[in-house]
Image (cartoon, rainbow, N blue to C red):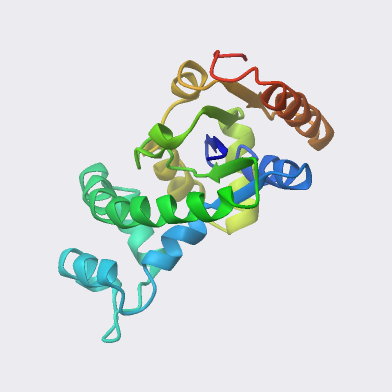
Length: 204
């Protein structure tokens, strides 16, 4: 089985960039956002279960309105927990299959997962890398990227783990407050350490 790296972090911190660097350096990358979309495809078993809880977010064909669901769960922690309880069961099974498939071709497999800890997927990982950035920097990035208003973005932040949580629960932390080149360099240094076998030792 491959060495599994969990890649996670705060919204707007720059995880997508870091994931790209891992891929460019020969790591297999499993995008857990895509996995979540797979389990919530129209008419899926997961959607049938979710539609009983959030009927206003589905049409007659059990197509999920993701933006509507986001507005609900990112402003209500209890409803977010209910959503996660359902969807993570389906994602967990799918990730096991994908890790096994990727392990055939890759020595190192990255789980690119914004909700790595919430899904319990951190237990599948040999090493965890988190990407963080200051809140105001992340706010600017997301409002530009997603076209969301500030209040919606701050609601999203409030539903996520703090920077301190990631710092205390990761083997490596990439602080992405500056230039792209700096984040890329930090990532390459971590890749070298992982390939040298310096993993699981809370190296920051």
